[in-house]
Length: 257
Image 1 (tube, rainbow, N blue to C red):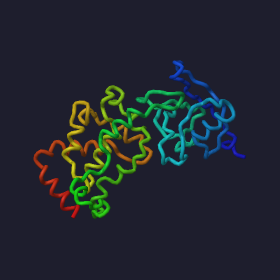
Image 2 (image 1 turned 45 degrees about the vertical axis):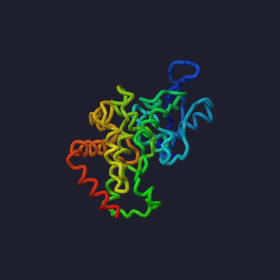
Image 3 (image 1 turned 60 degrees about the horizontal axis):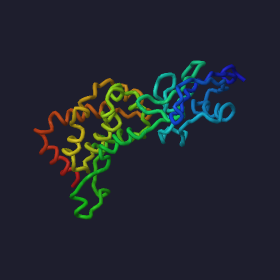
Image 4 (image 1 turned 90 degrees about the vertical axis):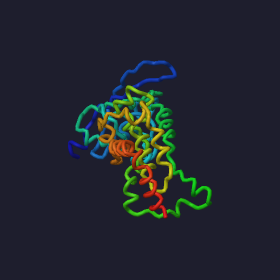
């Protein structure tokens, strides 16, 4: 057995219980790891063999559900997607995501995050189809049409970008990079007919103009989505929307036929 296989790390877990009003403190656990051990594996080992009360949120274990987001050594990551061997440090510190109210230990409240997501009306809107009883699935899209929004459809709502955003930390009314990227996802979809309405939702002093383009949101996305790009593309459309509104509507109608 190699030295890597014999490795043991110190797992520092942030502990807090909001219902009991307890303060934040850290508990440390010695966890044996191998080269394929993830941070989630280490947490579950500590929970099973050392302290059953450790609170963690997780589900798929394959970076699809977005449930296990947390700060790992200060960086927002998915615990199931982060191998301890990649961190190359003998102390792994796990904390709840920033910008989310802590509930207990590593579990946070996503209520505000999902409320901002819903404000974007994240679904295709097309009254012409609704009135004619046609189906949106009948709308043909070219590969170029799909490419405009495809990467933004990969979002798993893990909250990592929201946690990394410095603007969210100072303005709770700011929708955040996830919500704004989804606003662009539907704005760019040729099947949607409410472009002007979507831009009005985010055209606010707490809206898209509060983004300072730090780029931290895109840097932490585990699915390769670039929210910062979506926000900048939205801004570009907003700055030229009044003069190009008819042209954009014509292009969308043409692509849906």
